[in-house]
Each structure stands twice: as C-alpha cells, then as structure tokens.
Length: 346
Image (cartoon, rainbow, N blue to C red; front, side):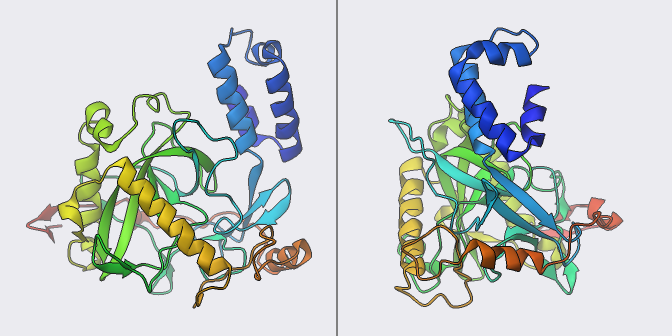
C-alpha cells in the first residue's frame, strides 16, 4: 500500500514524493488506487513524507551486544540526542508539536535506549550481566504497552533537585510514552503532542514519563490533556502506573515508587518539565556545566563546542561491526510472571 511504500523508500524518493504531495491531490489519488482523498488525508501524508527525512543505519546484530542504530537526516549523520530538534519545524498555533525518537515499539521486550556515552548517541540494547536486557512480561502485560522513547534535546540534570519531587535528575533525555493505536518502528521519529506526565522515583532519582500521542493518530484531536486519556482510553493510566510499579520485580528488585502518589500531572505541568529539561540540555551543550559521562558530539549545532564534521561522524560509524542478521531472542523472554503481594509466584 502507499504507506508501506513511503516507509521503504530511499530518502531522495521520499523528498520528491513530499513535493508531489504538496502540489497535487490528483497524484495522491492515483497512487492510492483511485481513492478520493480529503484535504486532511493529503496533509497527513505530507507530514508522513516529511518525517521520513530521518533514516536509520543499523550496525551489528540486533539483540546482541554489538547492535547499534545510527541516525541520518538527508543522508548526513546526526545524533538523536542532540541534533534532532525537540520541536517540529511546523508548529500548530494552538499547541507545540514535538519530535519523539522511538526506542522500543509497543509489544516488544528488548530494552533499547539512546546511548549517552557513545559518539553520535546510537540506540543500543541495555546490557545487564554481560547480556542484552529484555523486560519481563508481568501478567497481564506483554512487553512495553506503548511506543516508548525519548525527547531529543532534553536532559535531566543529575545535579539539579526537582522541587516538585525532591529528587535529582536521572542524567537521561526525557522518557516518552506514545499511546496511539499504531505500533511504531525502532528509530522512527514521531510528531507528538504532550498530554501529561507521571514521575517515578527510581533509585532516588526523578524519572519523568511524558504521556503523548502521535498527531496523526485518529484519537489525537480528542486527546488534549491528561483527563482525556481516561475518557477515551479508560484503564490506560492505571495500567501504566501498574506496569512501571511491578516490571522490575522479576529481577529481584522491589516495586518502583512514584512521586505524586502515582497520579498523572496535566499537560501544563508536563510542558513545564519539557521546557526546563530543554534548558538544562542547552546548558550542557554550551559547556556551561560538566557533561560527566555524556557524549555531546553533534553534527549540526554550530554554536556548540562539541560539533564534529561529517567525516568524523562517518569514521565513527564505519569503525563499528557491519549489519548482520539478528540474534535469536531467548525463549525465556516469552515467559509470563504472576504476582501475589508483590512477589513472583511462578
């Protein structure tokens, strides 16, 4: 179908397609099998085509310790942490549209995350005890129950104590949950709007979980604040809280703790968190604070002392193992864990 064609096209083809989409609705109708398309449908396809300016280059073997996902824009290497803008180029008059980098698609278990320490910050699988890490299936949940990822150009400063939680930042970009109906792809850059936030207190650190929805989702027009989630997606907020509360128990850790008694804060509060962590990231990238172990290399921020050339970026990628078939996912990843009184019973 047309959508599948866009996802598999080379960057130059997508760019040309975006031009055609913007110029003629008739072209769209022809490649969509003659279906009459509304102006809204055309606009949606234009947004999809533009988003494909970002592509990924996978290196190594998925589900192994050498797997890395690098990002490109118009065939130029970029960091998903530093170079992808937090805000989309085209902003709504009513509310900002933000870019979200998908690390873990819904219904999957491999715990992938943007690397803080490696040059160009590729997505890598978290390693525990010298093995790639997979989250456990805690009944009745199967893998992650949303598309999970991060906001670029945000950073939770580990030296800053958040007044509302009384805990310092966790040294990561903001975590993002996208709750729409489509299962995204690892490395996809989604256009989302913010609905609210929850906050874990993870090992004494503030760990924000920003609730969002893809602006192209059928429910996006109805979901405008955190209260709308319960109205149109009843049970999801409670399931989200319970998922985060219990997901580490099978590894021998106690249930996670929350700020605000586990209640989700509204959109206004969440956007305040986004703006503050964006400012903390700007301080990081301008060398106004100690980066510690954070790798700040980027290819587009001319104002940053950490900018590197495309030649340097290419050398970094080429030094990694080439793409290879994925490793098999261990069979134990499929196991369901059952609980009684916050203890595993099976």
